[in-house]
Image (cartoon, rainbow, N blue to C red; front, side, top):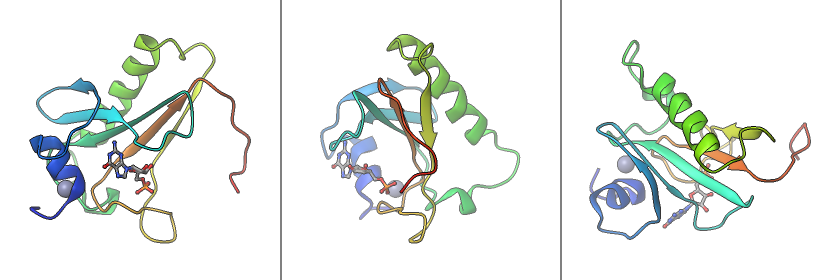
Length: 113
Ligand code: 5GP
Ligand code: ZN
């Protein structure tokens, strides 16, 4: 999608602080962090939200694996972390390219506000 912010980040047209990359996933620091470690993990292929992900391609499993790997690499696996997907307007999704927030390095309460 040519007008998608995260597609532009993947292509390098907009700079980002990369923390992980492989053939199918890109992860980078959120520009407005809500935790000492706040990363966005996104598929390189454009899906507007989790509702658009085809069945059986394994991308969501893979994103979870990358989240666990990053939590260990950045040292917040033992303390725990939050992995969040906002879906659609009511879910608070502002960028319509599927992404998971990985937040670590502080504690969170439940339920969210
Ligand atoms: P959403 O609200 O859609 O779940 O999350 C979108 C996230 O993208 C927000 O946390 C916001 O701070 C982040 N974001 C928006 N624009 C940029 C940008 O240009 N660069 C980076 N690194 N993050 C961005
Ligand atoms: Zn996109």
